[in-house]
Image (cartoon, rainbow, N blue to C red):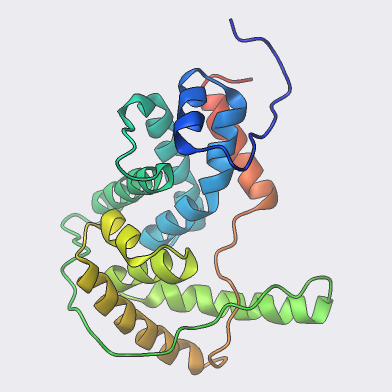
Length: 228
C-alpha cells in the first residue's frame, strides 16, 4: 500500500523512462511532474483545435486520464511530451468531429508565402499600464490565431507558440516536414495581415496556462486517477 506523503516534485533532470516507471507504480509526485511539464503545451494544442478555453481544459483532462490509464503503451519511440501531445490532439479532433461531422484538417489549400516570425516579448512585470496594454494585445492575437484556417492554425501554434521543431510538429500532426514548413509560411503571412491591421507586428505570448489554472487541472486529473 502506498504510504501517505506530501507530493514532492521530481528533479528537473528526471528522464522520461524514470518518470514513466514511477508513474506506473502510482507515484503521485511523478504523475504531477509529468502534468505540470506538459499542461501548457497540451492546452495550447487543444485550444488551437477547439478555440474554446473550457473545452480545451476538458480535453486535456481526458487526454491525461487516457494516457495514465494506458501508460504501459508508452514505448519511448518518441518523447513522452510528443506521445501526450498526440493523445491530446486526437482527443480534441475527436470532439471537433463530433461537433462538425466530416471535418478534415488536411482539406484546406496549402500555401508557401514568406513572412517574418512574429516576436513574443516578455510580460510587463508589475507595471499596471504595460500589463493592461499587453493584455489587450494578447486578446487581439488570440482572436487572430483563432481566425486562421485550422490546418494553418495547428502548425502555427505547435511551431511558433509552443516552440516544437519541424520534425516534432510533423509527427504530432501526421504531416510531411515539407508540408509543415509551407503551412507555417502561410500561417505567418495570414496572421501578420490580421494583426498588423490592429496593433502592428509586435505581440505578446498568447494562451498562457500557469498558476492556479495549471494547479487546478493537475489536481482534477489526480482526483480522477484515485489520488486524494
